[in-house]
Picture (spheres, rainbow, N blue to C red):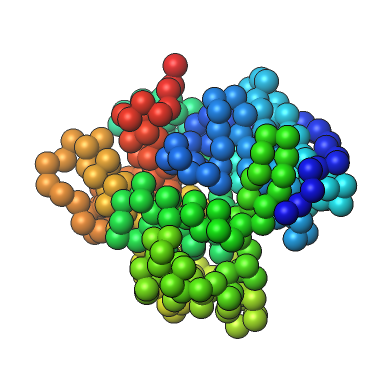
Length: 311
């Protein structure tokens, strides 16, 4: 296990306003017991792998226009702020300018109250496509609560540990840490046989270079979905999820997401259940911002459960 950190550093970020750390973190965290993204109501905490070193981050928001970030870890890890800061900005969407969305919503009677309600949330993105796809694979055809419990067990079993004053935290596993994972152990922590095989093959492909995502952003949506769907265990929902949460394509609403489309149905007041095509027909007038609506459907669900407050 890593030794107790001997170094810390602090710096500030100035997010594009409006920005609300609490809403953004909940879009990342989704469920209270998900261990990767920690939130106590004031401070967001997570352990990253930066230059293959575990690095604890803590983010607070003392004012709308400023975030205070603390990095903790070995001197070598803390010294890589140049690598850590872009990951944090990427993770929390601090540089995403939603002014166009806000202006668009002001002219839409349906959208305006929703956008005003959750003003300040930013669309987060996973630090890596491996983490994104692992989340998606774990959550296929199960409840989100169960899927995230499985991911939490994966992190507890394979994530790089870092001892801090607050205890031991773990970074999300890198592909190298999953390459030789025992399929039977993955099944014990909740992955099906097929999901375990898909995860190990994904890790092996990334580690060997057989799978290379470096050019994925240059593909259009159809090409990116086709490329991702060629991977074992990746279908349309998983691929679209990766386009939104991994690549940051904010016009993508994963239409096979049952929870999101049920919330969309309730929000729009439709009686009939929505299938994939009906979701996109519903979103036609808001298509450039469909991914933002996906996140806001999640926030509506979390608000209903009492996990987020807009007051």
